[in-house]
Length: 158
Ligand SMILES: [Fe+2]
Ligand SMILES: [Fe+2]
Image (cartoon, rainbow, N blue to C red):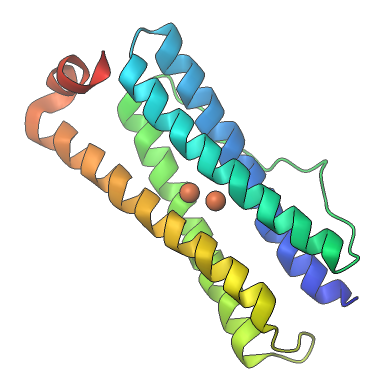
């Protein structure tokens, strides 16, 4: 077991937990406000992030590391849809940068961590999901820019 590799995976695990919490809040807030379709959209991303969490924690355990489960990061909570989407875009972009960095280390190795193809493949699969999330969120923000927030909520909210 390499503690530096576990540390790297735990940093991703915490990010996933943060995005799980953020998406769960967004889903609940939209449901309470009657925006059922938007609530479902955020819930789908919440489910994706939960799967990522599962893959990372399983990998840490398989490598006989200790997963960090008491650090949930700092989800950004907003009470309007546009800011929710902007906050989600921010965390997704950060996660993509962190996954790319981790994949680079697992491909080339560094002073502390050997190349690890199996772990790298797991991260690459998750990264593809995160890239899709960014595209979807950018699509939503473009719709808001096109029709305004009131139009967006009328068309896509209910
Ligand atoms: Fe994720
Ligand atoms: Fe994501």
